Length: 117
Image (tube, rainbow, N blue to C red):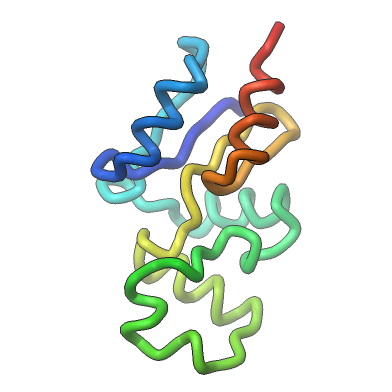
């Protein structure tokens, strides 16, 4: 599978997509228009190792709901990820068996490197 989960209204996501220069066989999924379903989220979790790895603690709703003051478990992360697209750390790039989560320089650099022939 070659897929990118991103948010089209996010400047950072758009900048990273431009930097990556994706081959045409990549599928782009705007998570606001088409949030990941249960099966997709489960597949991402299997690749990432946990729901927490996919979860964005920088999401505005994370603080608004007081979640930063609670101790969350995997079941909580799963529920929240399914509940609202904003909780997905983005972008998420899946390329074969590899997954790249987030927008740190290290992750973006590794994603770029993986796309090199």
